[in-house]
Amino acid sequence: MLNYILRRILMMIPTAIGVFTIVFLLIHFIPGDPVLMMLGDDAPLVAIENMRARLGLDQPLHVQYARFLTGIVQLDFGRSFANNRPVLDNILQVFPHTLRLALAATMVSVAIGIPFGIVASLNRDKFLDRTAMIGSLAGVSAPNFWLGLLLLTYFSVRLGWFPVTGAGAAGGVFGDVRYLVLPAVALGVASAALLTRLTRSSMLEVIQQDYIRTARAKGLTERTIVYKHALKNALIPVVTVVGINIGKLLGSTVTAEIVFSRPGIGALTVRSIYARDFPQVQTNLMLYAVIFMAINLLVDISYGFLDPRIKYD
Image 1: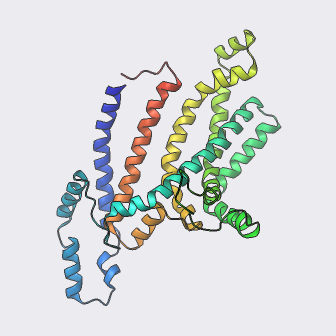
Image 2 (image 1 turned 45 degrees about the horizontal axis):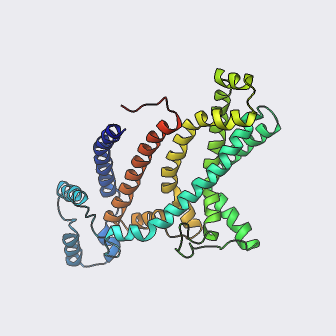
Image 3 (image 1 turned 30 degrees about the vertical axis):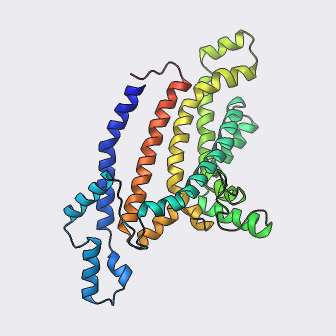
């Protein structure tokens, strides 16, 4: 296992370098001058040139790229053009809010998707199965920003059950849960719909296997067959999707953060793009890439715990 993990980490290095290079080029090739964004179009030419020199934007692109890679190796990601703070400090200030929201949305998707998928598979072509499939189709089709506005209008504005905007106090693992419920549901419904369909199809495949028939022939209860024998084997593709969804949700929280006026790395990235804040955008996107690669590694490692037949050489 240790050798496998080390090999995977070594394989992640060239992938990360490729991602970092693409991020750097995309940020520098998009239209817009960060200096003009800060000083305005009517700023004196001398002030513009001095600002470019201070930020290092007057240097050739390959020199800026070399400085960018050197900073990554030294864990120095630069300072934000917008507020002159270290970009890492800006991220650490808002990332806990994004992480809480992504984890809460994942919990919503798992709590809804897996049970509904199991129920649908055990009632194939019956009322519960058709209801679950229609619900999953509706969940996949509903845009999360539209669902967020709908939840906000009904449960916050009309009923007053949940706060309208903000993230609440930062204490505890999930902070003030009241501020998490609606955005987590808005983000988690689409993932729950996908998990429902995937769990159903995976369970249908597993319960038709010979060892399930043998378990029934031995007189085991249906509950034992489903939850002890079938579900564990059916969860392997489900775990893959859950892991990918965590990384996906970390990157898609921007809609919920904007709709619910929550602080987070998604909203920070959008503001930084508008301001052409190169160091902040680059670091934010690099963080997404590293987290996604780390989650994929953890998902692959989890296969061995779910299925003892899987070995890592």
